[in-house]
Image (cartoon, rainbow, N blue to C red; front, side, top):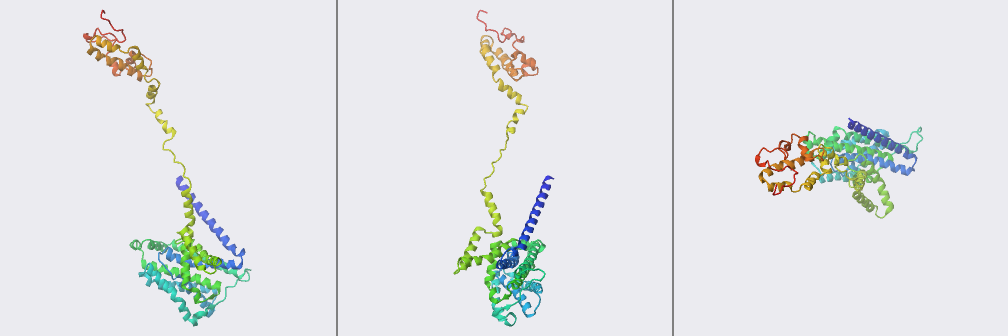
Length: 454
């Protein structure tokens, strides 16, 4: 019962700690645009929309176990969907978000069907081909996409009652959409679809035996991933206000995949960390070396992979395991305690041991000191056989009985009276009248040896 109560208490404390962490993070995120400069607020906004794109890629690669190098193409499709609706059809900004999500979901669903029979590097090459040929296609569709010149659209303006600047309002809107997207991804992974994706990633054969439809869930993985990328592309159009084919080259797909790997595959917090890496590391690389920022970017990726093979999300656990391994271990407790060592002294045989320890050889020493050779001399002078039969029944047994009795100083003759049932008491002693006439003349025990004249 106490174990159950302790477990419930631990779960409650863990939930409370998680809730406090979420509230603290939300407070910091909401208050961030009021303490940073406009450019820094813009960078934070870009981190949030990249996190939405990486959350979709994490569903496909981290939890679905499939490789995609064409995620930038879905990102571009969502961005152009919102731009075309805003520029050509003059729709509201909020209407472009579900349209971009639905359009990219259908595009991912259609693209996932031919990719069902592909896996590994073959699937990666097919998705990379999609990311490579999309920018030239957008340039050819100049009446719709604006060609190489791209499209310029208006940014969402803050309402008059809010009193916020444009960058602050844009940040809060993107923050709300990002929070909903991450919550949707979390709930999706905890649903039946998410468990099926995990089963497909771990072992396709076992998942199929368990009743999971591989074709359906693989296709859905592409569809969900494309939907999140389309939402991120729509937010990109809102924040930047301009789209062009050159902004969505295949390098974007490689960068997104690298950001997810650095952030942590299969982690709910990995997309946020990977988005920060994608946004800030190129600017840091540019500051370090204006001639070769790509070299610095690549070296930073290699360094992170050596330090944190499981990504930045798994770095705290790795550090904790390293510290625990190097801490001194507590000394091992002995199997027996001092109380256990002294336990045998309380057992029933303890009095016998104590009696033997107090006077171990007193009776034997006294017998040897008083009459060292009396029985032997008497046996040699009279009848050896008769006295040999009686000697073992007198001296040794009497001394043994006296040693086992509670009064060790009593004479040997009194031992048979103290223990009448002992073997020594049932045998005749030296003082009794012998039944055999041959031993009638034998001296009693303790008498001086007889001489020849006697």
